[in-house]
Image (cartoon, rainbow, N blue to C red):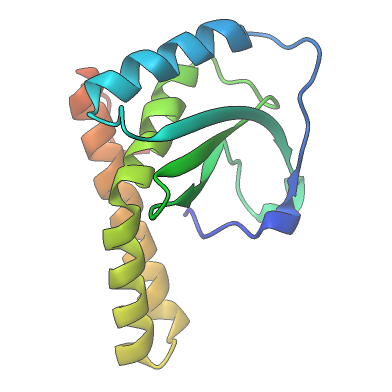
Amino acid sequence: MKKRIEKDLIVDFNPPTKRGVSLVNLKKRLSFWQKKLGMTDWKLNLKIVDFQKDSGYRQSGHFIANTKKKAATILMTWDPWRGDEEYTLVHEMIHVLLYDFDKFCENKIRSFSGNNEKIIDKYFKKLEKTVHQLTRLILGRTDKYR
């Protein structure tokens, strides 16, 4: 299950070498998907980072967004580099697109549930499943939710 990641769980890191798609090619894919997803009015950056291993699950991506400024940074792990970087890139971009709505819903759920972690976790699981399904559709995939 994916939970919100606190900034202190991210080690800012741009390794000089890595396996898989080059950073140059990833940035080209970012530009391609930015146009395809109708995000040309956004300032999007891409960073390869090292997520802390003690976060409780294997994380491949995350984002930091400022919807008022229409600016976001997509964070992608270099370890383990899974060989499906485009999926992770598009997945995180969809999170950015939904972020205003997501924050609104999360705040309402927190308020109405009295910050009940069980209910909040259920919301995050549903959000993650929805973003996964949208990513699969956009990429033309037929794989199932993992």
